[in-house]
Length: 392
Ligand SMILES: [Mn+2]
Image (cartoon, rainbow, N blue to C red; front, side):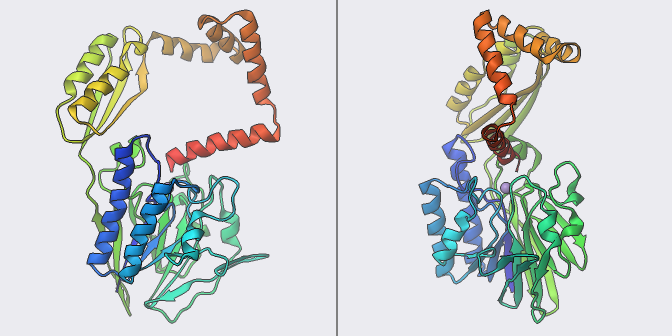
């Protein structure tokens, strides 16, 4: 018997670029094609099937069609909602809509999970596997729910699978939202999601934790850092797991350049950047501009570079200036060390050409934003959530 473990497919509008959003769909189709062609027994999805809890109609239609293909092939899909599958302020996730239409099994649908003094969790027994899981939450440490977890494990099966959607402390303290030790014990395979990197064979209790990573690159950092994208194919029999294979999907060609700005003028940096571009058939282009320019960083005409790039055939262009400095950024760094924030704000607005009255209004707005009212808190949470979306 064989199952696929996939996660973080993020169907939706990850990019402000149709080609890349279609690439994300195409990656999902590649996975479904494989499952159908190889007669896979079932699929476990470890969360973030969609990029948002309120996906656009084209995403809903696309997923409906793909899941119908799976259904026709007799392949069951077990899903836990991820941090992205739940809309802001909502309890239910978009996954539940598909569950009720019998296109997948939402492992956190009401019949599987009961919250009380304990969190009672049930699973499904399917093809001699016991499958259960806990949905992800946005940007909260969720050790609490895991501590209260009581799972009715069926021990008569060949393998036991636990799906979750968190970054465990094993991967580093910086991004963790769950202590590794908080995971329940007694499972053979921990199907992990949320962290978009790819990590295999993390030993835990008597089992292993597996992160397939995002199925397609969800941002520029993933494009640069993670060369391969894919999903796991796990074979098992009555003795347990036989083999695990990481199936790499086909992704678009990438061209990544870093250009150093030291001792250069903006126009020279721009010319050098343009000289790197070549005619191509829909490649991804990432240009990283780093170092310190002699004149102003704003002198690099990003719009012009992108225009030339798109004319040469690139389907997606990202130009990163976050490590590009000039005398102004140096001065700002010095200011931060020596001056009050309000002085820096005042001087900044003055330099931008605002008069005293306008600066007063701006100051009033800045101050009101620092007040701790519920509305502002909510707004800030929303902004942090969007930021979190970019990261995970
Ligand atoms: Mn994700």
